[in-house]
Length: 610
Image 1 (cartoon, rainbow, N blue to C red):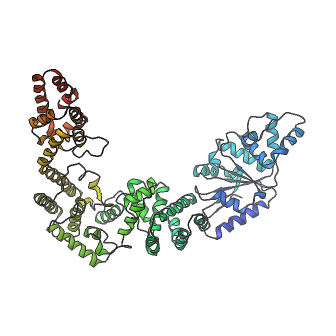
Image 2 (cartoon, one colour; image 1 turned 60 degrees about the horizontal axis):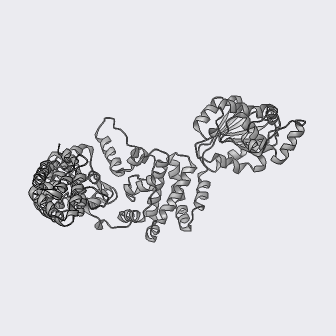
Image 3 (cartoon, rainbow, N blue to C red; image 1 turned 180 degrees about the vertical axis):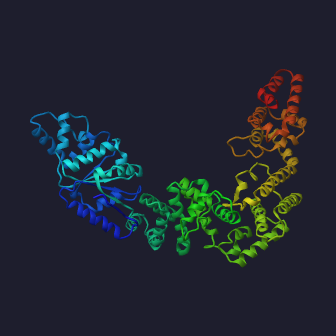
């Protein structure tokens, strides 16, 4: 009686085995034991039981929300006896005792008399199997529930089936199962049947056909994920349906691309929904996997295994670093639930399923060396070397890719320099493009912002741990060069701002301070120090009266967050000079002008200088 039956794979034989056992169990008149059904969360245990046993063969009782054993007894009674006849039978059996058992009371097992409680416990029919579900959603202690099950089994000769969804609950029941349960059956999902059911519910025939064409691959992916949750599979297929709606006909017509896309999405969705991967694990997937592989090959020391590498190891035919969907796109899809057709299509179009190697920039071709031929990789490396020597780049982001890959070329011995020399060469590269006025200025504090320095066009910069510090030094030098490029433009910017002082004080304020207008180009650029304080005050005082307060408030907002100690520290002496000149103007002024000058120098500006 205590032997355990375990289903080891969701094959066609196992549901028939479960069905055979339940057919045997329901044929017993007084088995004297219950059957415990266990399995992973979302494995479809309730569905399988209900598909094998008809409604006429079971009394199904959900224990959701039950708080006392009396509620459980009431729920069982309500299932065994129709509500309308129950009150008449109650009156007869208790010989006139008042038992006010409303439908709500019966369903919830509400507060009734002790006589009624005894009546409910003893009025039991053993003609069907009692199926108790949702144990983990009941507040009744496990030991008390076991007492309820045992009463029906031993005292009323009932056949009892208990479904345990929660692993903790299952363990508690397993510890005392000898007292109540004579058979334990572990259920795993009927994946193939569930897949067909979920796919059939999707709203387009085209999507259903694509999924059916790679059904075996998806089922294999689900098996290898070891999640065993049909709920997660269902949500994943539904999300795939959403993803397909964003694709063009050209995309969907490419069979290999759709297979790569579906399997990558499915595997990562299963990992994210099961809690094994987080947003941070989706950043730089490919680089993280490759760096760990290379690092482990180079050292005998224990290295911390990245979550994305562990996940990637679970799948035989899927590369979780595949960039058919970029990291940022996947984060939108899997973490934020945002499906933007433009970025999804753009990502697909950049994959080698939809573009030629010759159409991609050299840095991107070289980063795909595990997808292309050795000859194509070598040609891309040669192009990178040529671009570096000739100081060629299309954007700052592309340039940083070029500098990062310069270290990778050194690491692969494709250029004859070590990391320290490569660092010096990269700094010289930046100095040269600065001298040639090719380096974009960092005027609005966005060109070289921190988030930009981690990747470009959805691809993280390829940086190995062995040269990370060298590359970091290059990035710091890039910021310095960017600042120098900005200062070259200060004279022309100063002229622009002086002109605004006399014509449009409100626009001047928006240009130099953070507002909600989106025009705050120079909010963190210390360009005001390039303006002579006397010229500044002269233009300010000479502008129309409505300008005065706009300019004052713009300056107050500019320095309100302590910027004179950080980004704008070079303007501290400049501001002191401006305030000093205004104070002198105030001493010489009389009447209305004197009061106006007093009002445009708030105490907060004076405090900012200190």
